[in-house]
Length: 204
Image (tube, rainbow, N blue to C red; front, side, top):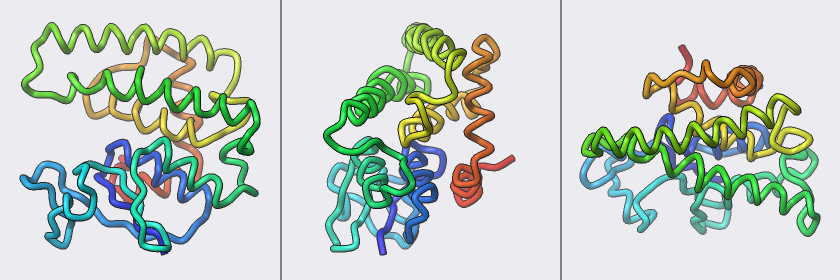
C-alpha cells in the first residue's frame, strides 16, 4: 500500500485529494515540519526518509519514494485512468495539464512563501501579495468562463485549491475575486476534498 508523508494544510493536501479522487488504497504519515529536525509522528527523522526534507513524499507499492507535488498528482492520476483526473499521456491536453501545474507551482505556490515567513519584511510580504493578486485577476477571469482549469476537473484543480486554501489561515480575503471564491466553494463540496480536509483536521 502506498504511504503519503504529509503535513496538514500544506501543499501535500493536493496529493491527498488526488488519492481520494482516484479511490486508491493508501496510508498517511504526518510530518512535523516545525520540529528541528523535522520528524514523523513516530519520531523518525524525516530526512532519513526524504533527504529533501519536505512534503509531499509518496512511498510507492514497490518501496520507492517519489517526491514533488506536480509529479505525484500525475502519478496518482495515471494509476486510475478511469477516473479521468489527468488527460492521456502524449496528448496536447496532457501538456495543458502540465502547463497548469507549472503555473500553480511557480506563480501561486512559490509567492506564498514570504507571507508565511515571520522574518520577511512588510515590503516583501506586500510585494508577494501584489504578485498573487495579479495572478488572481487572471484566474478570476478564467473561472468566470469555465468551472475548472481544464475543460473538466483535473489534479491541477486540487493543487490550486490547496494553495488558495492558505488564504484562510493567513486571513486574506478572496472577496475581490468572486469567480475564484466560487471555484473554492465548488471544489470544497467534492467528496474527495471533504475526505482529505477531514483527515487533516481542516474542516470548520
